[in-house]
Length: 315
Image (cartoon, one colour):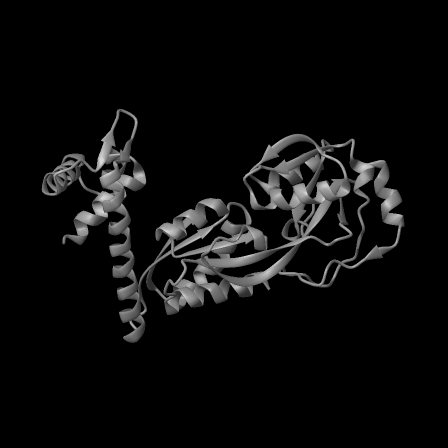
């Protein structure tokens, strides 16, 4: 069995295109097409439905791809085991993280990792949590660094790196701010994954005071949106959603412009722009910061070290 050929066919499926797959593999489109035609002739059946816009696997093609990916996983696991046994400190490591602070985390962690593992090729991928989970289950991603609630976990393996509280942010010019700030304040909840000089007390939010205000919220498929929706459900009203976004920095910008209110994780509370006030929720809702990898998957020593560096970053 030709492992190179297997990698080629899997890449065609990943890209849904021979042209894009050839570009990623640094081979000619003609050579890649010949590999596919040769394999289809050998198997006696087409592996893909071909159209002008993309290529999708046939039923037989899906059987081939499922087993091809398993073969590649076995290959990588074998190489990782041997590299660890020989202390070779080489190989490949694909890392997933979310946009925004995930990118900042990677930028901070990678130099220290590279210093200890200069011969490990790291492949970074900026992806949503759901896409990371899909790629991990398919064996296309070694580790995903994610923020989610317990109920949002899949049947993969999860290593908890920290816990982070969720907060309400409002424009400081809102008339309710002075009323709430004057009330008794309490410290944030007991679990904090972010770097803080000290526990900063925040007034408890009376969300009912903002029920007629517009809100900017993260998009519906984001993991924080389910938590946000639950907060509003328990408060007894549906928020007036002015805008949905994929970026917490956009949430901050719109609140700073006095356009709306928002809900963000604690990481973004640490560096609030002028003109934004922060409030804690009475229930102190939170989510987990985790490292996610495939069920029964093998974590190489390099992968374990990367995870520990990320844990240090958050704590």
